[in-house]
Length: 258
Length: 108
Image (cartoon, rainbow over all chains, first blue to last red; front, side, top):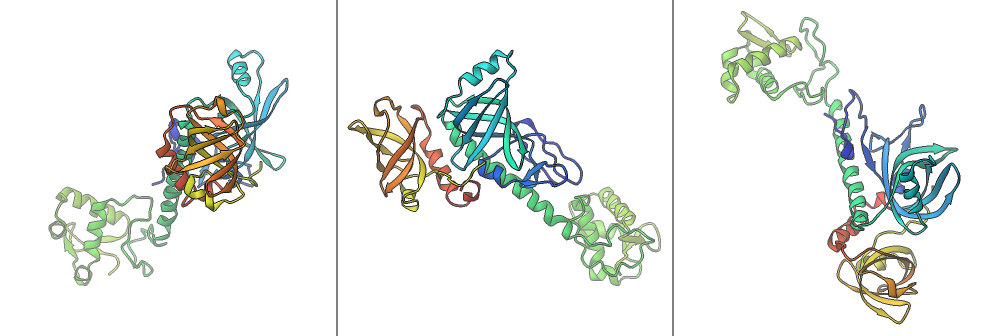
């Protein structure tokens, strides 16, 4: 299971990838090192699509023009250009922009863009910092989110490599010689605990050597903590996966690995 | 976009790691000395002195000094920013420690 930390605005999951519709707090250094998709010029950091970003730093070289205002934001890890388009009619916007002076600490929310090879931020909010604990908070959040996202994607990468290529092959339960271990953890988390345990019972040498395999009751007895219904459901699942097959009657099953 | 001249977060203990380099440090102002120096307490509880402070008189209780490390206990200020009178030094100190050790790659 993959999860992405999308900040306050929430998460969304897309099958096969991590889609981020939330907000990423970043340092300018992280922005400068973000990877870029060659096909569509979108960025990604720690395996997450970079969409909305928030950065915090000091304003330098503010330039006000008729259609936009731009400045360099220095957060101690680097400087990045920030641009904010001006509406002209929006008084809230005008107040925000008037508050911007060189040397002022601001919190920026915006999109990460690339123009002529240089990365910049197109901001939709630039707010002066009033409580400077926000500075400490922002950088701690950058560390936290980075750690969270790296861990989540680190685990997802390890998962699929454990599963065997033969796993999903249900063709008459034929002997899958490459299938070495009954290790279930890789395949999209579809095997629950009961199914794993039931299957491992069928994989035991004593079970494999028995011609008729095991009776459902035998299996249930060996794994306390599960109801007979759960065991039956697990067995049905394993049959559908081609891992076990029924032998002398509907109550006896044996691993296809024998 | 320019990451060639970062100014790492430091406390007193870390000053000696960046001699002659530009750093940023939040201090609790203890005493103003003359009209361009001050003595302050770092986030790890040690005293350092800062020279070439612009407008010493109008500083709040907590000040961020961005400047060059002159010695293990002195900074030569370039920019001083008032960080107000309520600032959590212990959280800041932990940030400084993390930003200079395991998570250094995010910063410098």
